[in-house]
Amino acid sequence: MKLKSTNLILYIALIITFLFSTLYSNSKVYGKTYYVNSALFNDNLIFSASNMPDFSLYARYAALIDGDNNRLLFGKNEDTKVPMASTTKIMTCIIALENAPDNLCCTTSALASSTPEVKLFAKEGEKFKLIDMLYSLMLKSHNDTAVIIAENVAKYILTEKNIINISDYSSNDLVKYFVGLMNNKAKDLGCTSTYFITPNGLDAKDDNGIHSTTAYDLCKIMAYCIKNDRFLKITQTNEYSFNSDKSSYTVTNANAFLNMYPDIISGKTGFTCDAGYCYVCAYKDNDRTFICAVLASGWPNNKTYKWKDTKKLLDYARNNYKKTLVLSKEDIPDSFIYSYGYENKYVHPGLDLNKDIYYELCENDKVNILYTINPVLSDIYPGDVIGQVNIFINDYLYESVPLLSDTYIGTPGYTYYIKYCFSRLFS
Image 1 (tube, rainbow, N blue to C red):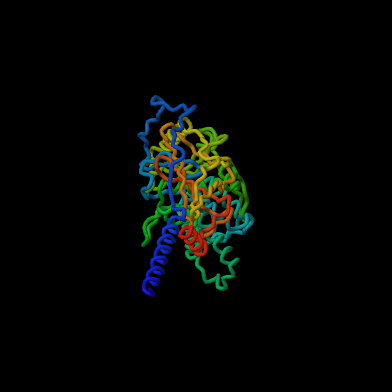
Image 2: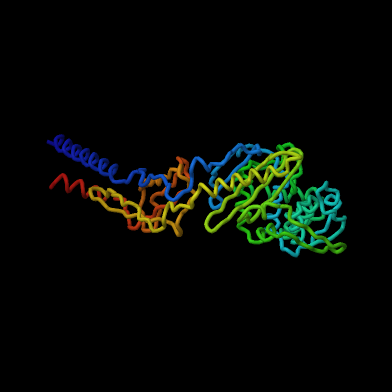
C-alpha cells in the first residue's frame, strides 16, 4: 500500500512537471520576423532610358551619395583606396573648426615655410589668425597654410589638455598629432578605408600605407563637413582678404564649379602627380542633398574633366531620384499576441521615432519594411524595447527603428504554474 502511494505521488509529480515544462516553454514570445510593406516607389519620377547619362566617366573612381544618410546612389570603383590630393583639406578644415577658436594666433614654423607649392609663401615666424588661415586653405588650397593650421591647432589642444612639456614637441610631432585627429574623425564617420599622412594632401607614404581614401569615404566626409555653417561660409566665399603681422593677402576661390552648376553649396579641388585631378562637392536644393566625388579624373592637360564628370553625376541624381517617405512617425505597427501561460495578451507596439524617415529613391529601388519581435525573457514595462522596424532598400539594411511596448508584459512564475497545474489535475 505504501508503495502504491509512493508511485501515485511520483506519477502526480511527473504529470505536474510535464505540464509545467510545456506551459513554461509555450509562455514566451519567441522572436519573429515579417514583412509589412514591399513596394516600388515610382510615382511622379522623370526617369527614362532616354535621359540616363552616359557613365563613361573620365574619372577612374567616383561616388554619388544621398547627403542626408550616406546611401550610395552610384559608384565606380568607389571603394578603391587611392590618393586624393587637396580634397584632404576638407578634413583639415573641419578638425580646426571643431577644436580651436577662430582668433587663435598661428605662428609659421620653418617646417611650414618650406612646404612645396601651391603655397601662401608665409615667412618663418609670421603670425596669422586661424580663421584667415582657413580661408587660405579652402579657397586657394595653400599647402604651407595646412601645416601652419595643423601645428598651431595641435599645440592649442595639447596646451588645453595640460601637457606639461609641450615645448618638447617638434613641428613634425605636432603635425602627426593633428593628422591623428584627422584619422580618428574618419573612423568615427565610418570611413574605414581612409588614411591621412599629411594635412595638405601631398603624396606621401609611410609604413602603414599611402595617403589615401576612397571616393565613397570622401563623400561621407563632405556630407559631415557641410553640417557645419562656418565650413559652408568659408567654402562659399569667392574672395577673401586678410593681414598677418607682416603682410596683406587676398585669396580667390579655385572652386569654379560654384558658379557653373546650380545649388552647389561647397566643394574642394585637388591635384598631385599620383592623384590626378580630384573634386568633391555638395549639392542642395529645397529637399535633396547630393554629394559626389571624382578621383583621378584626368591628368594635365585635362583640367576640365572633373567638372564634366561631376555634372553627369549631379544631372543623373536630380533627374532620377525623388525624396520619398519610407517610414512615418505616425505609422501604427501591427499588434501581436503574447502568450501568458494559458492566456493571451495583445500588445500594440509603438515606434521610437521623432521624425519621418525619407530616402532618395528612383523607380528601380525596392523598399521593404521588416518587423522583428524580440523574444520576451523577462518582465517588460511600457516604453521598453521589444523589437525593431528594419528598413531595407534593394535588400540592404539601411536603418533600424526600435519598437516600444505599450503595456506591461509579465513572465509567469513558478507559483502561477503550480496553481494552474493543480487546478487542471483536480478540476
